[in-house]
Image 1 (cartoon, rainbow over the protein chains, first blue to last red):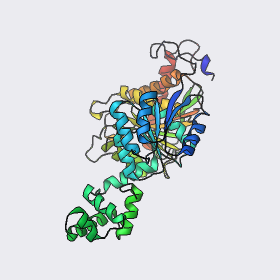
Image 2 (cartoon, rainbow over the protein chains, first blue to last red):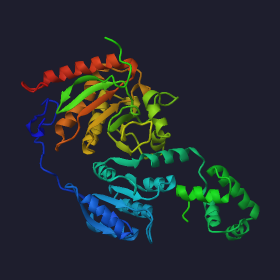
Image 3 (tube, rainbow over the protein chains, first blue to last red):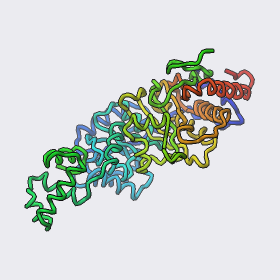
Image 4 (tube, each protein chain N blue to C red):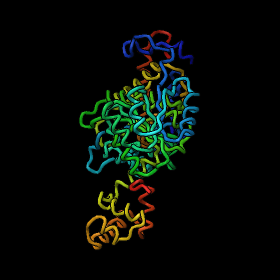
Length: 229
Length: 207
């Protein structure tokens, strides 16, 4: 049925104002990523849509905060790993000043820890760079309208790992040092504790991550976004 | 009439704005549509948590529905929406849409109208050709349900959103999900509600 020929079905039930059929102003988007090629790619995809417009780009977390203040975009597409300030730190900073800012993370990181940090910082969407073009466009429209959008696999990862006991901040510190090639003795010296304490931490880490050895633990932790290599 | 026994047994209700409306014995996991919406309350009334289709959905996405709600990523406030894109099998839909239903202690059919409008608007925005909605009332522990009021509220929510959408849309099918055991009764309630709404239309506007 032709949309323009229809009238509200029940005047008493539905609004009686004029339905706006003209296109509304486009969704104004800020693209934040330290890779120019990625920014160009996103711009190329977005600008095929009549209802969207890229109004600016930023190549770091700090630049994103500045550009957000200047441009006040409707949507920010935010990478996570960038120079000087990470994406989740930039999200928190933007949301602190502008609590209604709508931010979608567009990242290569599928790990639950990355996603949870970003969502807790105030991101309304979390998409992987492997997502389909259609998903990105749908997420932009959805978040612009006040919704949230998550990749289902990321959501499942969050759920699966929240069930498990998460490693403590101290245990993450120990594992980060192990990931950078330090022995238990070296880690103990750096943290000012005994080697037995580090062994106990490592044992707890293995149990919490379901790891069989320290290499396995480092691999799992990096994949989940608990540590950065 | 024989009792329908499979997910192919969608029972038509009518059509509005080019969108066929039906009731089918599906849930958000089994509905083979572009976007499968499921109502989610702030909590379940039963201490055992969600049952039925809502529990089926939560399990199909690894517990994500309850975890995202528990962690505050999705608060289930009335009309709040969260889309989960490209879910894996056994979910048949391309996108799962969680739709906030608010507090089940103060639930009323009006909350369903809000939820339905939110789900419909999201389906239209996403360019879905087919969509479904499972209200999760029984699944959330709401035992006393006015079937006529529920059907009327859901239809009002759907039709008002279709009517108010400011752009052309691709949607061709909307399915209201129900348990197989309730299919005949649910279909009858929707058919009555649809007929009542049709009678309220201006002359010449009846479908």
